[in-house]
Length: 188
Image (cartoon, rainbow, N blue to C red):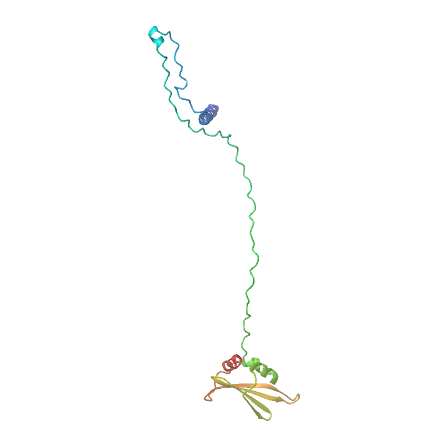
C-alpha cells in the first residue's frame, strides 16, 4: 500500500513539474534570430583577402513577436457573497379619476314603507296623483310601462306610506314591477 502512495505522490510531483515548465515557457522572452547573434570566426587573412573588405553577415530582420504579458500566478478563488439586490420603486402614478359604480337599482321591497318625500326624491314628481280615501295613487309613465305607487294613510301618525306597487305596459296589461321601477329611476 505504501508503494502505491509513493508512486501516486511522485506522479503528482511530475505533473506539477510539467505544468511549471509549460507555464514558464509561455512567459519567457521570444528567441532572437540566429543571425543576430552570429559572429564570424577570427581567421588569418590571406594576402588576396586582405585587400577585399570583409564580408558582413546578411542581416535578417525579423519582426518581433508580441510579448505576452506576464501574468501573476493564479490566486485562489474566494467566493464573495453577492451584493443584495435593490429594487427601484417608482413613485405611484397619479390615480385616474375613478367613477364610483352606480348604486344598485331599487326594488319593490326597497320602496315599501317610504314616506311621500322619499318617493319624490327617488322617482321625481308623479305625472298623476289620484286621491281616494284612505289612499293616494301616484302614477309614473315611462316609455315602456306605467308604475302605480299606492300610499296609504297611517292612521295614528296621519302620514302616508307606500303600501303597494303595480306596473302595467302601455296597453294596460300587468308587467314586471321591478323592471318598470328601474326604468323610472333611470329616467331623467
